[in-house]
Amino acid sequence: MAHLDVTRPVTLEVREARRPIVGYFTLSAVLSTTVAATLAIIFVWPFLCMVGQSFNSLDVLMNTLWPIPSEFTTELYELMVTRYRFHEYIWNSVLVVFTSTLLSVFASALAGYALAKCEFPGRDLLFVMILAIMLLPSETMLIPRFVVMQDLKLVNNYWGLILPSVGGGAFGIFLMRQFMLQVPTEMLEAARIDGASELGLFTRVVVPTMLGPIGVLATLSLRGGWNALLWPQILITDERKMLLMPAIARLNNLTVADPHARRVVIAAAITAAVVPLGLYSYSQRYFIASLAGAIKG
View (tube, rainbow, N blue to C red):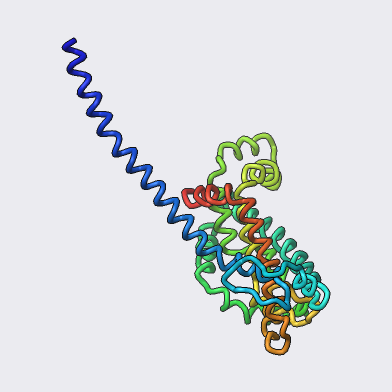
C-alpha cells in the first residue's frame, strides 16, 4: 500500500503536466493550419477570379473580385481559337519546348556525369567556369546569341530556339553534377570490371538510378522554356511561327484597338498556366526530396 501511495501522486502529476503540452501543440497546429489556409486563399483568389472571368459572357458585366461568372460560357476560348489562332501558337510552343527540353536534359545529364565521375585534365577548372557562367545575367547573352543565330541563318527558325539547348545550361549541368555525386563509385567500378563502356555505364547504370533528379531537371527546363518571353520574341518575328507567350504579349498590346483582346488575353493566360500547374502537381512529391538531396550532395 505504501508503494501505491507513493506512485499514485507521481502518476497524477505526470498526467497533469502532459495535458497543457498536448493542448499547446494542438492549438499551435490549429493556428498554423488556419494561417496557411488563409494565405493560400489570398494568393489563389486572384487566379480563381481570372478563371471566372474567362468563362463569363462578353455581354454580361461581372464583379472582378468574385470568381463565379454571371453567365457561364466558353465564348472567350472559342474566340481564342477561331479568331486569334492560339491553337497554332500552342502547337508551336509544344514542338519547340519539348524538343529543347529533351536535348537539354540529355546534355546536362551527360555533362554532369562526366564532371562527377570521370577523371580528365582540367575537370575542376571547367566546373569553375560553369559556376562563373551561372553568375552572368541571361540578358547579357541575348545580343551575342542573336548575332550568332543571324550568321547561321536561324532567325525566324525554330532551330534557333532549340540548338542553344543542346549544350544544356550552366544551372542544369551544375544540378546534374550534384545529383551524380550521389551515385556510388563502387557500383561504377564493378560495371567497368564487367566490361561496360562509359556510355553503357551512363545509359544502363546511372540513368535508371537518376530518374527522379532527371525528372526534376526536365520539369525546370520545361517550365523555363514554356514561360520564356524575351528570347523567342527577339528571334521569332514571323506571326505564324510565334510561341504562346510572345503571342499573348502581342495580343495584350492590341487591347486598345480590339475590345475583346483583353478578355481573350485572360483566357490565353489561363490556358498557358495549365502546363506549369500540371507539371508541379505531378512532380511535387519528388521535387523537394530530389533538390534536398542535390544540395546535400
